Structure formats: structure tokens, C-alpha cells
Length: 612
Image (cartoon, rainbow, N blue to C red):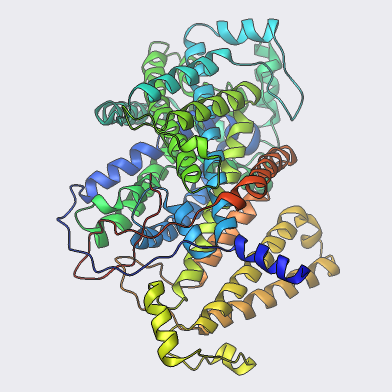
């Protein structure tokens, strides 16, 4: 009796929405060229990161080596982007990461993916409104922060922010009201803001190389002492570290890379418009790679210019670029840069708030969140309850947490989501072709059940050239084991690097054993037959690239501070309580419906449940 109950419970956790095969009509080519897709990716990626992160990472975490941090974060994002490109080929719709998890690894992981996406969007919106407030506050002489910090304090070290930013909360409430009144994407306004932002950042880069001083990459303790003697208030100075280009060592670069990952989280906007591309096979992968490369160049150039203009320990928190022009004596330019910052942050806030609302609506419509959140306002077809809920959650998070905490929390949620996507890509590539339920039932009646026997020989030399149910199960189990082993390896390498370098025999044996197991299980997956389903893009070098993406994501997650993990744990506990208390009982099975998919004379697997 108990075994049956546990079996039923386990089946609920892995319930999946099915991808059925459809013979779809070849739709007219979409309206977006490769250039349009690149512009969209750059517009949704460049902006908030450079204004939010530059001072936080350079002043206290990595110093001038922030450029290396952006490079490492860009490489990690590229691996995740390739995985995103493949699943966009299978499910070219919004909310695909959540849906893709639903159709590959099951309901529980789909909920975790969706819940983490909500976390990423909420913390992204909150961090950008905080940054918006800081930039505006800098223009009026820091009157807002000074008044609030003197009269109201919530400060609890490593837990709550120093002071509640009512201005940022008010901005969230205002934008929530706009979302409730109007559902358009403000495309023209967003485009204008993006152009202004890129022009301003170009101005910053050129100015930095004109007015910068290479000595700021070679600072010593003597420079630090001289700076202290010139300043009346030394409390604004950050730590010196060991000076030079890498003042906080390799550990600072790793910690900075984990935080800088936040700056590249907008590329997934390309995936949501994949079906509108004129040439799916060419535009989407090219758009992802080119937009990430442009974003890296911008971040690299701005961080180089900033650390050349201002010694890293003198960077002011929250508003570095405008203040840098004060430092070099170009005071009027600070207003130009501030306008660019406000434009970029406004665009990011609007986009993120739309994503919060629709992600909540999608999960509620599937029954994983409370059904009231899926209620629509009939006059405008806007999910009004989800809109209000997203505003309340974002305002609450903005009120309680500081900018650095929000950035780290968004990064850890995004890294976990990207890891889940990579696992899904790995699993689905090795699964047998999915058939409609009626067809599958007919085949079983005509041919009877097909039993496959798992042997050690069969693990490395499967008998079928095409995926079978058994080979698919082998990959499913091996992928889960690899995810666990890569997590343990990342934890060991991140938490005890000094012991490893010192030659601690126990840890060396553990690492070697983990590497042997990972290599062996990877070899088992590599020997399994892959699906031959034609797609406009597939991740190359399977299974290595998805596994490398998972390892890099996990390793970066391990660089996060303990306080970030505590906040993330609380968020996940709330989510799991909602799922096991409500979602698991109310999740509904939805019959797949055909969706518009552009093809190149190919039949693609596609289905939709509830879409953004």
C-alpha cells in the first residue's frame, strides 16, 4: 500500500506535457532579419549590467581585472546560449525554458525552472529600479539617500539593506499601474532608449581612453596612502587589496565572474522571437553569438575606461560612470552619461516587469500556482491579478534588499535555470521520437510490448542505431548522475582550492575519483544513439558542451556568498511549499495544440500549452 502511494506520488513529480508531431504548413517568412535579432539581443542585454555592476565588482571584488570577469562570464553565457538555441528550435515560443523543462524532465523541474525565472525577473527589476534611484539621486546631490539613511534604517549586516529606498518602490508601483492599463511593448520607446544608451556608452569608452591613466592599473600602497591624505572623508574609499591589475587575486576574478554573469542575462530575449526570424537556421544562432560578442566588447570597453579614469578603490557605489567624469574634470558630461543610464535602466525595468507578469500567469494557468493569478481582465485581455502580484513581490524585494544582494540573487537563479536547460538539451537529444498517444497505443496493440534488457555491454554498444526507450532512460539516469557529480566537483574546487594546491591527499583522491566517474558516465552517454529529428540548429559536440556549461554554471554558483544562498534557499522553500501544498494537486494536463513554426521543408516537433 505504501509502495503504491509512493509510486503515484513519484509519477506526479515527473508528469510531462507531451510534444506531439504535426505536419504544419510552411508559414511565410518572419519579419525579423539577422540584424534585427542582433539589435534585439544587444538592446535587452547591454545597459543595466554596466551601470549596476561596474563599481560593485571593480571596487571591492576584482579591481581592474573586472575585464577578465566579463570575458569569463561571456564564455559561460555563450555555452548557455547555444543550449537555448537548440531548444528554441523545438519550442520557438515565449516561456520556452519553463515549457521545455515540462516536456523533458517533468513537472517538478518545470516548476523549479519557472520559479527561478520569476526570481530572476523580480530581482532583475528590483536591482534596476534601485540603480535608477541611485543615478537620479546622484544628479540631485544624493539628497534621497542621505535623508532616508538618517531617518529610517533597516540595516542588518548581510541580510537587509542599509535603508529602504521608497523612491525605487514608488517607481515599481508606477510601472505596475502602467502595465495594468496598457499591454503594448513600447517598441519605439525601447528602440530609442537603446540607441541613446549605445551612443552614451561609446562616448564613455572613447573618453576613458583619452583621459585615462595606465598607472591606475598599477596602483600600490603608496598611491593608496597619498589618496587618503588628499581626502577629507576616507570612508568612501574601498579596499586596496594587493594593488596592481589583479588586486584581489584569482579568487576575486572568480567571485567577480559569478556577479558579472548578471550582465549577460538578456540574450534569451532572442529565443522568444525565434519564430519571427526570416531565416531560422541562420539568424538565431548568428544573432546569439554576435549579440553576445557586441555586449562583451561594450562591457570590456566600459570597464577598461572606468578603471583607467578612476582608481578602483575610489569608485562610488551605485553611480560610477557619471561620477567618473567628475573625477577627470568633465563635470557637464556626467549629465549626458546619467541620461544614458536612465534610458537603459528604464528599458530594462519595463521588459522585466512584463516577463514577471506573464511567467506568473503561465504557471497559474497550468495549475502550478494559484488559479486566481491566471484571471484575465476581459476588456483588455490583461492578467490583472498576475500584474498586481508581480508589482507587490517586486516592491517588497526592492524595499528589503540592497543592490549587490539583488544582483547576486538574480545571478544564482539564472545560473540554475541555464543549468536545467543544458540538462534538458542533453536528455532530449537522446530520446526516441515522440508519437501521439493514439498512435502509440495502436502500435502497442499490434506489435505487443517491446522488452529491452540492459547489459553492461549494451551501455557502450547499444544495438539500435536510433534512440529507444531503454537508451533514453540510460541517458536520463546518467545525466542526473552527472549533474550531481559536477555539483560535488564544483563545490570541492570552489570551497577548498588552497588545500588542493597544497597537495592534500584526501581531496586529491576525491577529485580524481569524481573525474573518473564523470568521464565514464559521459562515455556511456556518448555511445547512445542520438535523435535524427531535423532542427534548424543543434548544439555541437554533444555531450561535452552541455556538460561544460553545467559545470561552469555550478562553479560560478559556488562563488556566491553564504547570505545569497540563504536568501535563495528561503525563496526555494516558499516555492516548494506552494508546489507540494497546491500545485501538485491542481496541475492540469493540457492537450497539445499546433503552433506556427517556420520550417525549411522540415517537420518540426512543436506543441503548446499556455504561452506567453
